[in-house]
Length: 262
Image (cartoon, rainbow, N blue to C red; front, side):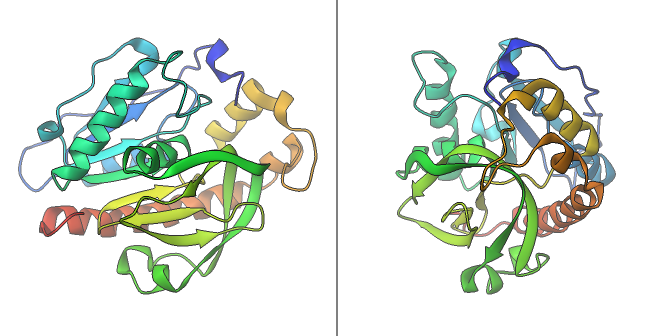
């Protein structure tokens, strides 16, 4: 998605006013307009959870950790080490560390998962091969033992678009999944800090946007599919959205139930 910064991609934002009470205050860190929260928006709206944004491409300010219960960190074409080009990356990592330290729920998707890993002492490097398209991930015994991931089949076809990966996990993290193209696909730190290298939130609209904006990257190889393959499986996107909803239901329970965090 290296071309995705060149143009603002319009989408409808969903945050609506909610009654205070039994809600999870969600704050989304969005790096580019193209990569919005997709099905997470529908889940939050259905639950009545208030949702706010820090959209870096609009120069919006970061929140304080006490302003949210769940921090959702989206993907993007930048790399975690490009702080000279994107100065807000340093502040973003500071917020991640503060959120984890205060026991908040934190979910990172693609770049977001890499940012969490880096902020907590892991290492992010270039993956041996790019991974773009629909490929299965395989959940391990640690995932099977954690109710947070009970909604996933042991082999799950999910959407990938990445060149880097969290090659060394943070000291407190447990590996959850791998794929043929990438050894580290998901992790959990404590009981409510989660990184997914892949995307479960993508809708058909998001997939079409990726192809429109970034189709030049889709040169067929072992783990890169062509545009027709990316768009040929709306049923995969729908299934991933269901898995995301189940996962968020369980994460919601942990956040609202309190407990230990990391």
